[in-house]
Length: 447
Image 1 (tube, one colour):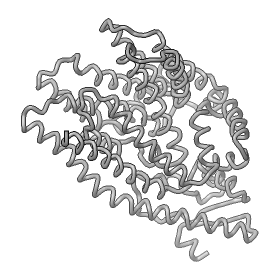
Image 2 (image 1 turned 45 degrees about the vertical axis):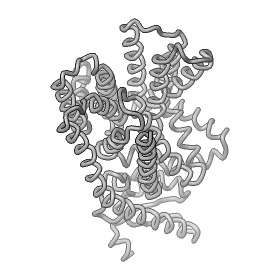
Image 3 (image 1 turned 30 degrees about the horizontal axis):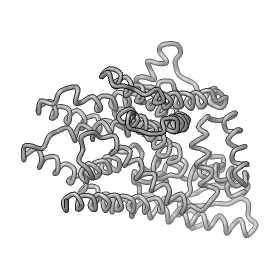
Image 4 (image 1 turned 135 degrees about the vertical axis):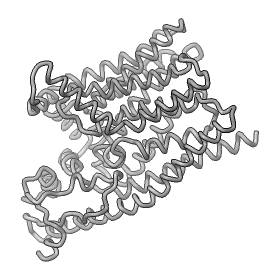
């Protein structure tokens, strides 16, 4: 009993440390890039009704990701610390959802939770863009949490349908969370639909009794997905993209590009999964025990290759696939039995070896993120000072070079030397000035 209580306390401590680690990074991530544009839109909207009106305009003219952009604009309407706190809680929430989808783990399994954290921090797709940057986080971290949350509820309902009371309320809950999950992100929401169908198909194949209200989950997700997919704004945006090829060659070329992106962004997780499956099979693990691993692997690959419908997907579009693949890896890790002392030691060494590596990486990265944040905040203060002085054409310095890290999106979205650069244009709208252009730091000092 005392051992169980100790494990419980250790689990809470691990979750608390993980929360503080990502919270610090959130506080050190400044406003940048699309935050300027959506921040100006949220400011001009003025209130909740104005935000809803702006989302209708966004749906008709730009994109159907209304759930993500509504969340984003609500946060941009308030103080940044509110977002930092909520975003850090959401990150822990996503970690716990991954944890909840792992079968045969121990209760309050600290090793599994630490493994999930390490896979997210070390192998998470574009961590600075998808988890820390405000616009990127609302689109990818929050979207994937919504999607995996809806999938997890369906999975829970499939396993406990006979025991659950108030089936009508459960049906409504599954339907509403399904709509929200389906309305979040094109390829990841599609992966979520596939996950639900695979889970229901598995239950059906095993002749498990499926309560009718369980189908409200995938029905809601399909409806949410179709609302997003049929957005007139998606077709407007698609009209501005072009391919070098036409016909079937176009999709072959896209398949090739996606494959290269999968190699670049997911190779480490795929290799880890391969090694884990080989170890599991060496321990005589049957294929049916690997079913959950296989389901999430298939969903991850489908989520990736759904991007052949897009001419040039950005790397962060693979974030949801990375989360599904993380579930597959952790599930297979748990299936490897620890009856042999050598295997038990190997598993523990692998997890806590990654923790040691991440400890050193975190210290170095948080310092670099802080340096980038310092430059952004100094520049922000300077622009407001110049505007208060009556200047509408402002020259600012580029951020100092040499502090690159995967945990900051700052260099990728720095201002341009041309006032017509797209980031500059968003900043001009945000600061309400005529022009902003950047020069190298040494030239700005002379200026």
